Length: 186
Image (cartoon, rainbow, N blue to C red):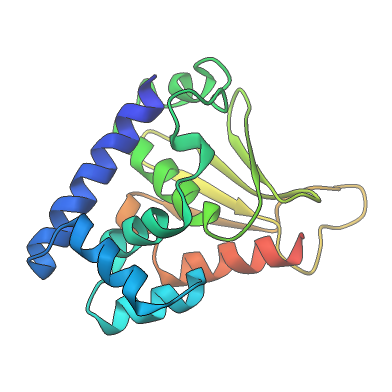
């Protein structure tokens, strides 16, 4: 499955960044994380930042500690038989944006991923909080359902759209908005 291939590449890249940035590999960092006594994701991110581990390597170590999202498992059928692959078939350079948003969203709490013909919806146990849509050949739109909620007659509509041109554009501000949307819709 192509999803797993994309994730394997992202994980391999994150492992290389971790080793390059710290001189240590994942097994050593996993030992350090366990020895730290940190038992929740937020505190682990703070502790890793204090150790100089940020960005993709930090995300990797958080998933190593607390588990990888279901959609990274090649046995998972979340991608609805190639629907997501079809969305990015003519713009593969944009696929890492979806992968990054999904990885970050998975760290927020329980969620489901629904692949639709034109977009991927992210749902809390209550309702949709985000939509990831490859809008043009050079951009993906992240639609968020943020307070105040949509006007009457548009239930479930997104209230904010963030244009993203690369996975690196998924910055702290974008992640804050994603977190707010998740929280507001749980």
